[in-house]
Image (tube, rainbow, N blue to C red; front, top):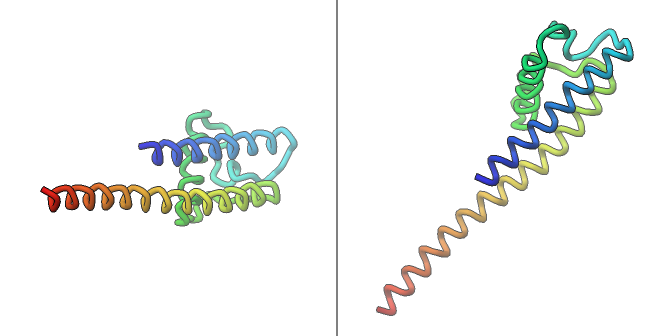
Length: 118
């Protein structure tokens, strides 16, 4: 459960950063942003957040459908940072899953040892 919460919170953080970046770019008169590309610049914050969360999720699980794209240098840098962090999260996730299985096997071996003693 802790692992899932960690992944969800990292995705949430980057989705918020992704929306905030587009907001700052809009205020700085960037003509091309990911929001203008999919035409959601005037949509509700919830819709923007949902699209950003979707983007960070498909980026972090390395699917990358290509429907939402970084459209300028700032967004490309943010994507690179997201992908690099995603590699770390992926490694952490694999390590945690391995630790869970190791714990299961350890408990199983302890039970077998105690049964053989009896």
